[in-house]
Image 1: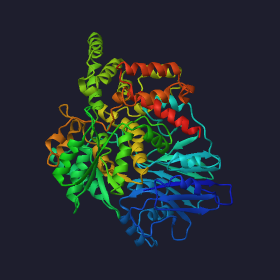
Image 2 (image 1 turned 90 degrees about the horizontal axis):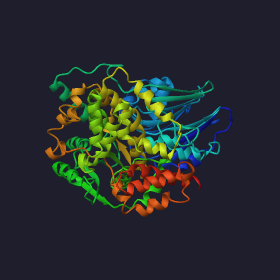
Image 3 (image 1 turned 90 degrees about the vertical axis):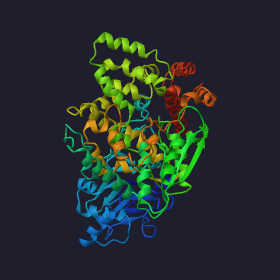
Image 4 (image 1 turned 120 degrees about the vertical axis):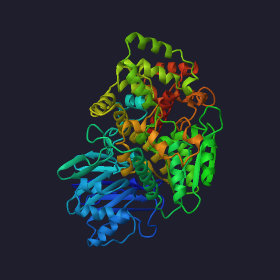
Length: 620
């Protein structure tokens, strides 16, 4: 795991200076740094040493130095690729995965190169013979990769801060990003908060040469009904194959020359990973948990402790307090943008705790995406039936939902009401009302007449899934939006801030391609979400863990913003706040007052608070 950065100027005769760009990524790769240079070209890497601790330091190139590579991530089958390259006559001087990319790039076109790599990665390859730069990103977008392009120049980096360290890249805010951010809690790929800075989309490769810049796909998640069909397997065969793929995915991610452990939240996904890892490991697994000492239902330590005890792990847990003010500024700096998901806080603390003990950690990210584990999927399926009811019945149900006590539905009463109230809008808009960070009516008050480009893109993603079943469409939409721009961004920034590599077995290519083709009845059955995974895990997990209600990895924002953090957020968003230059100040005051009165707007307040801190950091 590393940070990469560089610059290419096709007109220049000397290599650009990129040491400053690479230095901004030191937290991602504290062990070594190096730059591969050619006339007009410099690609650098700040290295976190995980495999090949002796010979793997950058810069890395092929035999004759005509192909250089900077790499972030892990290629899990690099040993097999190495054997094939050696058999074909290539000479390799290292034993790690970075060098195999340089040698593959000698012979393969950009799309074939990316398809040959199985893992999590973002890479830059300069081919001096072809005078061509390649930027590739893994299939799901686990590793970030940003770029800025201006004619014959291109600047790239793992994080936006590396690009902004280059003198040619302007520091300009894109105001059109704000309504997108308030709605989704992030700016959807490929755009960012920074004007002109883009992300290479997941499953894509960028080519930059004398013919210009091209971004093309090499992989997309399978979508039954559009580009494939559902699998037709008997229950025993499905169970055996899924268990095999899960074991293989965990086993492949055990390879490391440094200490390795696992996150353990007490949920099904991370618990399955820990259970399989413990069965595969000759020594006790090190596991790590974050909790909150309160009664809001956010503390999952008891469930994690059950799993740790069942598998004899060396378990470490940390209880955190609402000491947000000092941490959130660090979060915004590491993200380079405001970030609406407040679970970045416990994820950041978890990364800090884990890095004290290990360099690599396995996580449960992706389980809900592959096996339909989110309650909103089940709600959308119910809503689809609800929309077929007579109008008077629907109207009565909407009115009744507005009177549901806040404590019912696990505190989700507001979400239930919003979902039903928007049912007449149809999918995906009623679904969006369940997941948005700022309710539509508040976006309209804060930003009257805002540019709806993000909603247009959202509608286009949904339209592209036409022909698939509802559950497949919802999961595909989630993979292309929430997973890449929220969950994986959070996991990457919150871990790499501490120089910790996080690996996600559920996002294994073979496993994902199998799981996404399972028939809907294998994912949701008799109201039970994630049925296929739970079926496979029956002999792995305690009953209390396997059948517990899903909880997000969140924080009690609603309570904190009325109690411990009320003075902080009032001071932050009060008179003189930078955010008042972009949203209506009166609407901000109204929103804070509504939250104080009992309306749960904690997520919206968090988005505004992190936006404010981002704007202040831009003043420096």
